Image: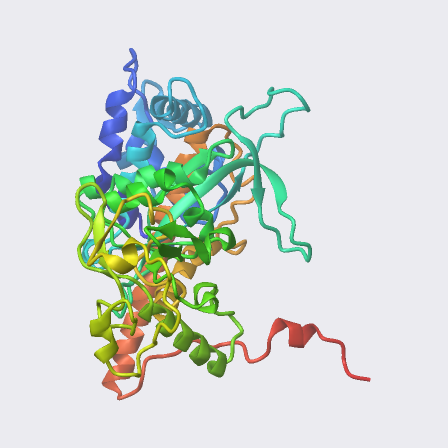
Length: 496
């Protein structure tokens, strides 16, 4: 049970209630249910594990102690005596709020007012001591079904015209995606810095978009707005669903906002992909044209790889780094930077660079240099335009050991979605919210994420206190219990 004061602090710190109140029309009669009380009722209902129904919001408010009901306006003095908040009053205030925050012409994307309100609520759920503890975010999207039934074939008539058909992964044996009718929920979860202290995995930004829109550019705008709100961007961890988009929809605006991308590459983007001034473009870098093909075609390490396989894979990626053109400058205002031949940088031996032939023989040597060397072999430095590596360039060489360790943090985004899809706490499957339209669904989803942040913080604080007690007794921190047997081993048939 989350204390009432903790939920009120989040709402007050966000400043969302008075801003929304200023958007609502003023009538002849004063509304009994204020926006602040409505948001509080939504948080209480979600915190109690109730579905996102307005009846449950009203029940949560009516179940408060008498003093709190009086203070919050749930019980008001009317001419005939005390009056308890009704469902019609709850529905009326919520419809005013949703209408004020929605777009004038709904198109499946949140309005600036709605996105700003949700950003403030989520940011208020992050305690002050953790706001500057890390700037890394793991991002991903998931499905969120609408309660509306899909429209009949060749029509668009349904209860939720903003929803649309989308694809999601299933847990079945077949690999095909399955269709659903609703929205894409995108979220960014706080992750620790590389080699930094652990931080609670709090959802810091989220947005909702119709499946007719690409969720990647929809969420890119939310992330790029964070520096303007005083929140710097650090490492942004994303899977190949983000990196495979055109640079203008993801990589370019994120880099311009100061983010450092750590992302998996789509199979269509891996390996050698053309040349620039003779240098081979591969995996987000430029390589010497004499680089062995096997090194350029290295893929990510398999999850079930043995330690010996990991060591061999890391040795190959380290050797590939020898052939990489070395960066000399940072990106300028237009995204241009300069690189240098690896032989001129002293990483390999090449007859086209006589000075490199005096280096130790422990370095790779180019035995068959190009017969007609191009600019990358003849010039001292090379200028690389912004569009050459705009899609695949990232913080670490792909798929090196440093990249693998850094990218492993991305699983925090999946854990974040798992906590809001847990049937034991808050299952957001179809029917969890029976309101239709993007604005009502996004408001309830944001409240759910804010409540989820409080639960994560409670567990985090309990772990820290337990670790402190164990340290005082000279014991190491408690470790997680890991499954000793795999699911395949448990489900395998017994031997004859």
